[in-house]
Image (cartoon, rainbow, N blue to C red; front, top):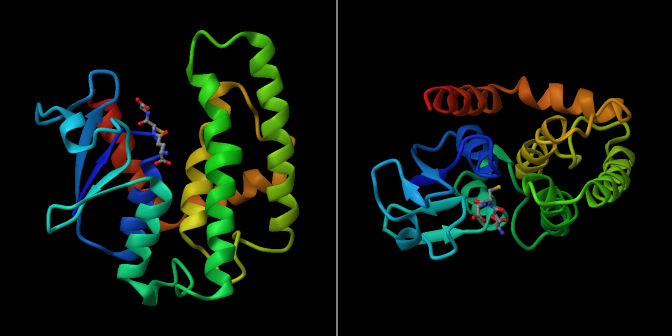
Length: 205
Ligand SMILES: N[C@@H](CCC(=O)N[C@@H](CS)C(=O)NCC(=O)O)C(=O)O
């Protein structure tokens, strides 16, 4: 399998899951501005959506949308318990988290990455995200991870998007439980390896 990614982007989530699942994969870096891959291919010919993450399966099929990709990967290795079995209530709980992270945390970060966004909108977005962070903290109460079973693909995704907060001027200090959650997640070997790889790629230019 090939994961099309950009260092530090939301493609970090499936990158973490590939490691946690112990699956073999190749990484293909994408320049999100030029829409070119590191090999000089037009990324829009890989996926007309033009955004990462994109997974190319060994049979050549293309899978997009982070929440679908991470569940696909988890289901390849059910014994790693990165996702509860399909059809169970627990699986819908996982999907509840994935959708919450995608729509209530991931996308509300988007205005911060647009230099045209006015300061007033940035402040209101910070407040909105803060309210969502409060909901996450309440759910984490007494748990190491989002789901009672332990680390799942939802944690890979939550970690990825929360890691953007300090860079956009949104300190996690008011939510100590989130800070300790981030520290806990990034100590996992699969997470640490993905972070080290993406930092090295970014440093290399
Ligand atoms: N709906 C997509 C959104 C993915 C997304 O927002 N990707 C960003 C990076 S975090 C991107 O590639 N942006 C470049 C662009 O949209 O041109 C998903 O959930 O996978």
